[in-house]
Length: 528
Image 1: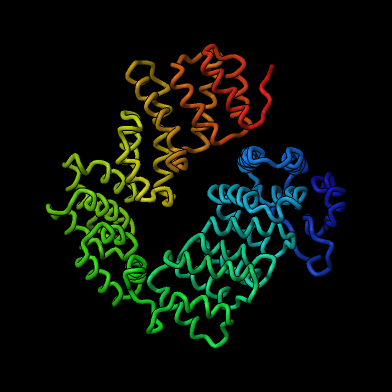
Image 2: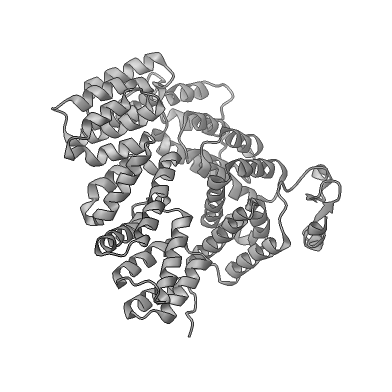
């Protein structure tokens, strides 16, 4: 119990007390006095460090640059706690109470903290789910609960957490808007039904009118089964007048959502989504793909059942299919193969002999969870500069590779291995590869592919740059600057220390100039 005694006064000053029988902090409020407020223990030093970061933000007049710096500090500290075996979410959120007035209505700030929580979830999924469930059920601090609701929306695919925020907060005027936008983050059929439960109870007020307009504007992102759900809620006698008006605006003359020129794309999306479970919808989807036989047909196949691989196989083997559509079909084959289409690997193997298929096959094979092709992708980034890779970048984006965690893990691990291999060698060939790799690294942020760069490799880059400062590693200034541009997007204490060292000790004036600029952008006073 000594750990808790060390910060007992801090809790008590905030209206909390430490209960010996539970060894945890609980609310003084009698309604929840017998329940746990925190799932994880945390040290006073960790709490104080988070408090210091939030106080620094508060004292900085809360500019945009300060938000960036706050995110960097929080991510760094949370990563440190994870390495020590702690889950940092509760500790961070509890400390954020010192900026409650700002956090209450600042959506951008709430989203930044939510992103930090999502990063923890990706590293400690089981532990973070337990923490978030406890916060939903036990906490009553509005700003912090809003952050958690946003984080659950970003996580996106945990049905239990999504159901909990609907149950606890879907009708609460303090949180309803936040819950609505959390569901709109991931336009699944399950989330559509959750949103419709909110739409059903909309009232005549400015906030609810805005939600209705947003729903109408973004309805096209939901799937085919959505048409049935919308009609079901539209016909519900308990629907409010405002909710009825909202749904009526997206209904058609026969009270169903039919395909028209205006919503044809949406109708096809819905059909693809529903074909997963509905046999009739699947038959309609296959017929639609065969009739249209366009790029959208090849693309939508990845959202259907594995059996659609037979259609894709025939399309890939069709010599008359243009290359753009073939690339899309190849990538979809990788995805349906991962879902269970048995012939995917053999079909993709037949595509490898043709140079024009190279990039699409590599992306597809990674999505099929084949490790060696992640290595081939990395080798390409080591051989070619960004301006030579527009097609590859386009395919990675259209395939939405970063949304498949297993694929991201394959790629990031391959980048780490290649990076270490390059640093073990000292010859012109490897220096050229390192130059290409560093150049592409800095482009990843602009191309929204930064998930490929793990915290490990970013840390290794900092170590390399510190070696450059000590003259123990010799690199051209162009490579050094590319590496600077890579790590500054993930600002933390190590990056800040590296920037200071480069500014103060680098021999190359251009490197000094760039590092000083990066410090200045974050309102950090460079050393004299």
